[in-house]
Image (cartoon, rainbow, N blue to C red; front, side, top):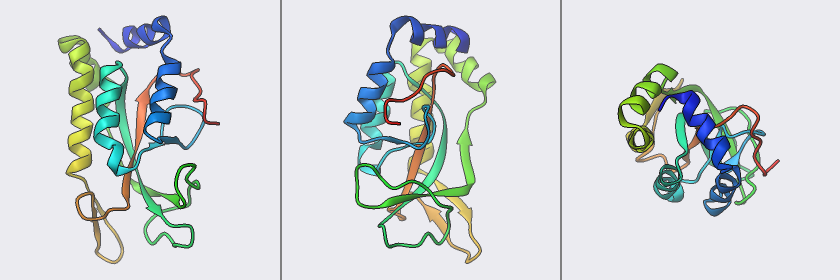
Length: 167
């Protein structure tokens, strides 16, 4: 299977509603209209990735965010949205992005077919749990293991015309 076939499979199966239900189940918050920058709190990350994989949805990138309480100032990030599920807000970290390019993704999909989706999604799980993001002006390095506010935003590879039900 290549990326074009993957996208066609999603459209043919009419699984967009399933993806929206997964977002609800894990209190996953898309920042925009599509299926990129879907912020998921750390306690749901592993199960979210497992569910995406089991339903055949492919993660192709991660952005990084800090979860802060409403009155907290973001020392390292930009602005961002108020959480729809929690009392705080998310601040986007501007200098860090993890992705696989389309050629890498296709290589795994072609060689492993649907197992390639699980393999790629597991790759991103490994990236998350070992994450050390860039060093900031104060020499601080954010680490997923120790900085409990560090949260990924998932980019899910979907047809360009898909819009999430959250907007």
